Image (cartoon, rainbow, N blue to C red; front, top):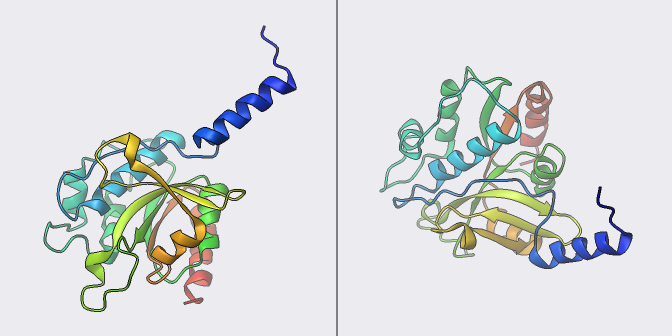
Length: 212
């Protein structure tokens, strides 16, 4: 048996802080979107695989990105219609525990914080990649990423960007203030409902939607 001193444990902790490795970060396998405007189906693939592995979801076959794109009516011209991600739900009926995707708007960042830090579930967020509002084509500027951690102490949001080709460059982070600037002008995100939490979240959704 190996015994570790407090000094050893502190050294490990500090090294992980420097490397940006945190125990609260969700394990998401990175997938690269191979077609233009396929960020949503790719993000759904990453989130779905993460939830199934982390929470031991049973009863589902493997979904390819191309199949998810077809289910969500994604094209390389118009991308994914806002609420089309919920089309996935009729294909998740055999999941145990129960699993659903819910498209949401007009929320607060505290709700995303709760998903990541308390329910330990990934969140798909729609960001404005150019960091400015474009009145003529606002939806063309939105880009879906998978949120995998919010470090409350460092006030930093970590996410996996499907537009990046490799895992090394895919995981990025933004200070929460910079993140909200790119998210809050539309406040669009996708929530994962899992198991018995769906009864609780349904009421939470109704309460949250009234805050628009």
